[in-house]
Image (cartoon, rainbow, N blue to C red):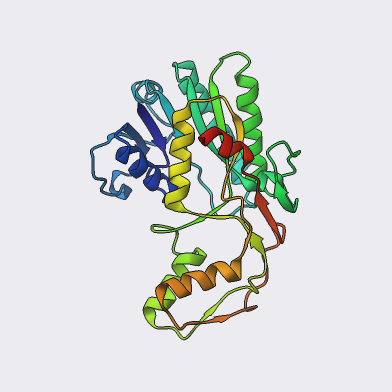
Length: 278
């Protein structure tokens, strides 16, 4: 298959491209800055530019693939910024609509668990969405816009609701790289929240594997939670990282307050994901 990937220079995107290449797919990547792209083991076809300013010929190149994995989204991690629905949402919709009008027939778009809002417990895809921040609202609005578009321009869509991930290449301000940096410096303690909140985490390599497997089914599955389905406390997760590293760093629990933009305990149900990947 020939697969296009947006957001290819990002944390998740670079692992998705690596997974596609390992499976011998032809890959086209969209990037604003070729210097941010990592060195992969096989060549990729590069389209350079912002997705809102592409030339018709570039849009044609991206549309002429078997599948698009759309990961690009600006403005993170400021989840409350109006940028998500004032700027990013219209830009994203116009870009995807242009590709579909040019013949793109199958795509996977990255959604977010924040579409569920402040709902707790195990979250199933058919739950009513209740986004509580600008990012979750904008993502869900894009999903609904694509659903309406599909009535006039049929295409298959997987809306991959992502939960939490960690691994190589993550933003230096995220929990995992902050911890690894502290251990590498020889710090004696690591400041964090109380760590009792329950979350759903996947290593980024496993997340990339699941996204590629989903994409290559080329199904019209709609919303799919892409997650582990197994709640874990943030404290236990961090303790596992420390143990794996063989570090003696002490966790300074309760130094930071718990985030107020997400429920205290939530995780994704994976029945639909597991069924599609069987």
